[in-house]
Amino acid sequence: MRELLLLRHAKSSWDDPTLDDFDRPLAERGRKAAPVMGRAMAARGWVPQAAFVSAALRARQTWRLVAGGLGGQAPRAVHDEALYMASPERLLGFLQQAPEDAGRVVLVGHNPGLEELALLLAGPASDEEALSRLREKFPTAALARFEIACPWRALAPAAAQLTHFLRPRDL
Image 1 (cartoon, rainbow, N blue to C red):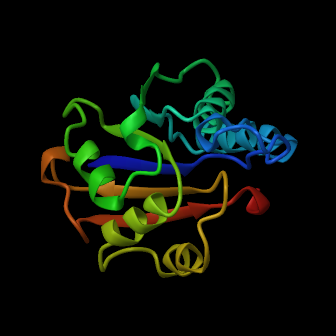
Image 2: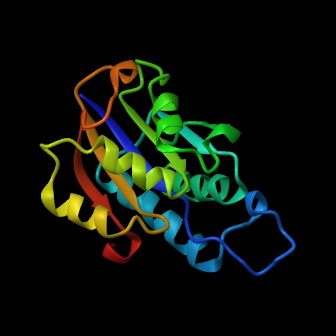
């Protein structure tokens, strides 16, 4: 059984209107939420073997803080500009290329693509409460956890089981 963790970047700052969207850093709230999510992942045993992270500054900063909360067990991230504001189809294609020996993968990205991907992947055996909260909103620093019975290359719509949906405010 494989596991997929979809993590939305933490809250970003809009303080400097001259910055390009790609270069926006985390806000104070985001800098506080990200390590909390990392510790929550570690406490549940959800330490990934592979990490794919949007190259946008706020996503890289989120992963760095989440990784710090994983107790030194975090994998080195692959940063990719193709994950920045990617469509759900592009994100799915990226995940289909994940190494088959990676049993648990985290993807750190952006809405709306990340939320749309989560809803696309959630199959009929998904946890109803988690799915209901996901449909409500995929807020910053939230994490959707899926179990996947197929190889990464065969990942397809409705092929995953959403088991958990964690938001910083729930922790």
